[in-house]
Image (cartoon, rainbow, N blue to C red):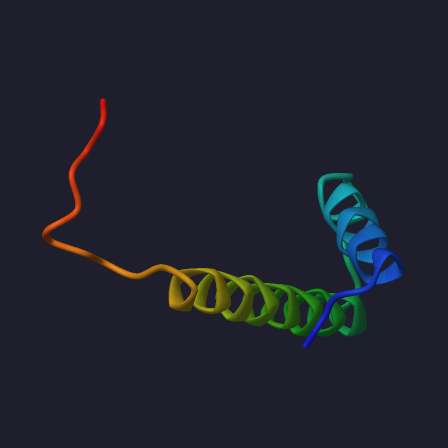
Length: 64
């Protein structure tokens, strides 16, 4: 599940609006929460995919 640039932009817009005295409407709060959850899910999936690409070899020598 990828997050589009437009969705990231909207997340940022909602955050900025939430910091103003007017704040967010109830609908915007729901939208913000849904977008945040989608974003977090995408980050988790990306991290899992990256970690699955690594292999641990206890016999490998570290050349540092």
